[in-house]
Amino acid sequence: MELETLTQTIINALEDVKARDIKVFNTEELTDQFECVVIASGTSGRQTRALAYAVSHAVKEAGGSVIGMEGDDTGEWVLVDCGQVVCHVLQPNVRDYYNLEEIWGGKELFLKAQTECAPHLMPHRAHKPEQSAE
Image 1 (cartoon, rainbow, N blue to C red):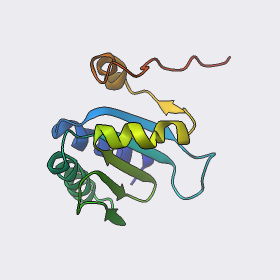
Image 2: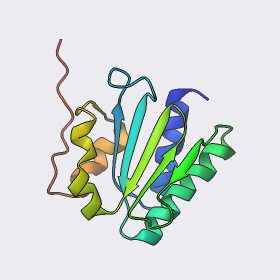
Image 3: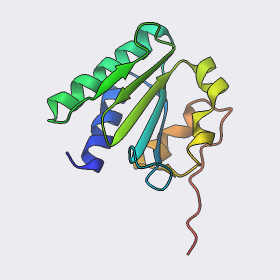
C-alpha cells in the first residue's frame, strides 16, 4: 500500500471515531523503521482502544497489514504498527507527559483538514504549519 494512501486511511479511521488533535509527522530522516508517525488523542481508555481498533480494521480493509498493536489492555497509550506508519493513540494526560511531538522533530505534515480543524482542538497547543524555506 502506498504511504499516502496508508496515512490517509489511518487519519480517516481516527476521524470516524472522533479522535482529537490528530498530527502526522514525517520520520524518514529520523529512523529507518517507519516513514510516518500519526499521533491522536482519545478521551478515555475505551475511546483510545476503539480508535486503535478502527485504525487496524480500516488498514486491513484497505489491503494493508497491521504488524502489531500494543497497550490495548489499559488504553492509556495504544500503538498500532502499520509498517510504514506507526499510529499512537493516547489519553491527553499521557500525551502531554510524553510529548511525542517533540521527539519526532516537529516535521509535522499538514493536511487540508488538519489546517482547518486544528485551531478548534486542544487550544493550549500551537497549530500553525511551519513556513517552508525557499
